[in-house]
Length: 78
Image (tube, rainbow, N blue to C red):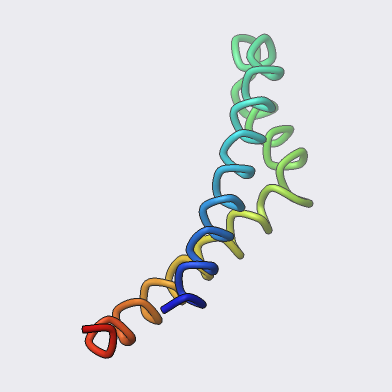
């Protein structure tokens, strides 16, 4: 149960980091969105691809694993 809770906390931190990076990049590209929508999405994808994308992907995977671990170990806790 403890491992599941630790993984849940890590996944929430990773997903939050990815969301904050997305909001920051989307805000900085807002003038470009007014001019050209295709360039906006291409630049946004280019800026988010290295770290925030993988943070979000690993965070969602850890979230699923943590939920499974918690649900499996829940009957043993009681």
